[in-house]
Length: 350
Image (cartoon, rainbow, N blue to C red):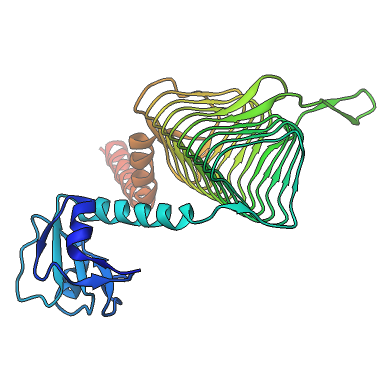
C-alpha cells in the first residue's frame, strides 16, 4: 500500500517541505533507507545521513536546520521520534485490523463468550466460560484457561498461556511465550525436612494498556490477586511472584525479578537483572539501578538506589570513587606513618 507525504502529514500533524505527492510503501532507517521508503531523523548523531539517504520521505523536527540541499520530501513536526512512533502504531493497527475470523484447528468451548471482530489463530484453546472482548487478537498456539476474561482490543501473541480465572484489561499486549497465572512458589516446610505445597487459589489481574515482553512469567496469588496496574511495561524474561502488586506506569527491564507480596509503587523504574526480595514496599518514582539487590523497603519517593544490597545511588557513587582511590590512599598513609616514625625518632634523640 502506498501513501503520500500529504496524507502522512495529516496523520502526524506535520508540515510538508517538497513534493507532497511523493509516495512511500514501507519504512527504513535513515542510514539504510531506499527509494520508496519513509525514514525519520531525531538523533543529531545521524544528521549526516539526512543529505545522503535515498529515502523518499523523511520526518524531521521543526528545529532541524538544513546545512545543504536535501533530495527527499521532508515532513516537519514538533517531535520526530514521537511522530514516527505514532505513525508506526497506526500502521500496525491497520495491519492487525485485517486479522479476523477463527482459524482451524482450534478449540473453543461452547460456553465461551466471543466479542466482535476477533481473531483466533490456529491451534488456540479457549476453556469453559472464558470471555473474549471485541477486537481481541489471539495468535496461533495461545492457551486461554477456564473463566479467563480478556477485554477489548487486547493482543495475545503466539504461545502465550493464561491460566484459569485470570483477568486481562483493555489494549493489553502480551508477547510470545509469556505465562500468566502459573502457581506461586509456595511450599510449607515439614518436620521431616520435606515441603508441602500450598495451593495457589488466587489469580492475576492485568489492567489496561499494559505491555508484557516475551517469556515473562507472572504467578497467580496464593489468595487474592497478583496485580499489574494500568500503563505498566514489562520487558522480556521477567519473573513476577505471587501476590506482587505493580503500580501504574512502572517499567521493568529484562531479567529482573520481584519476590512474593512485594508492592511496587507508580512510575517506578527497575533496571535489568535487578532483584527485589519479598514483602517489600517501593514508593512512587523510585529508580533501581541494573543488577541491584533490594533487600529493604524504599519508602522515600523519588529515591534512587544501586548495588547489592542496594543503597542510595549518590552515596554508592562516592563509595566507588573512594574504592578506586584506595591504592593512592594506602600509599599516602604509608608515607605519613614513615614521617611520624621519623618525628618520633628525632624527638627521642633530642
